[in-house]
Length: 205
Length: 253
Image (tube, each protein chain N blue to C red):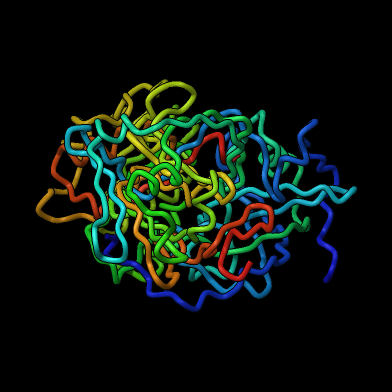
């Protein structure tokens, strides 16, 4: 590989202290940028529901009030957006996917892959492995407050080990699927898996 | 679902290419455009962006995303960069870079916030500040292919001096079916006939193409502008699936 050209005089603002927490090509932001492909959906809580499907069969559906009654978990995690920003030590509260599967009476996932469905027809694909074992939740609180609509409220998926587009905003359904297939951004050239530590931003990375 | 979703199972791997700065254009006191030669560039569609990677002498690297402002028909690639004082990459790109300098770039990225004549019109663009860049690619492309699809740009800037590409926009608007409406939110020159406030629902209602014309709408700018504009357009009856958004904020630093 040829060496990249040097930008003379470029020093950059290097992160101090937590470089081991920053995946390649990322920088730390203190803000919380909003990135969405279209208008923000506003689903009122009365009509909101979250469901789990095994392929095309609905296994369980919770209303907002039923969902809120499920055991809650709080986490502190670092999040990494494919557009390069990372945000450290973010606090979330919600229901872990493990808890959801338990509540649905699923002793184990039915397939190795999932498609996550959101309001606004957004979908993203995630292997089951990355959703269980405490690795993911459906989050309804951010920094102690109800999740704002532009950040995915009332509820978004939170899968901090993958690039943040996998943490689907306005999430409504987890669907087990037999074979992995691309979601919305994956179809448009983003990576099928999206591991920030391997810098899997785009197809082929 | 998006009506223009590409059926793409065969994405080429996006490799880093070396871009050489051919020309630097002072757009406004805070904004510069870098005109680049990128050997091997595979081409882009209007609205797409690229990743830029700078390498310091000791090997430290920083990456940022920038929209392509030039039309695909242009052999050179234009990136328009706004200075964000506390940023890491934009201060370098807007003040230190000289013609002949090189850095890495890869793309094109993003296939959703894209307009081509095949998508049809009318085309309705709403920009805030440097959010004009990907929309400019669409307008330059529309002019380059001599499209007669009616187009409207509603463009919000702080002051007259902050309007990016103003002369070129005015020239394009004088030629064909493009209407450009400016609004200035902080200060207006004397005799100013354009808008004099932030984009709001009543401004949108008075300038927008009719709902029945089913315009293809692209909104790019700071989050607050994008959120409120998209919300207002939904209230005015425009179709959700025809409204595409891209946010420019401090994240572009």
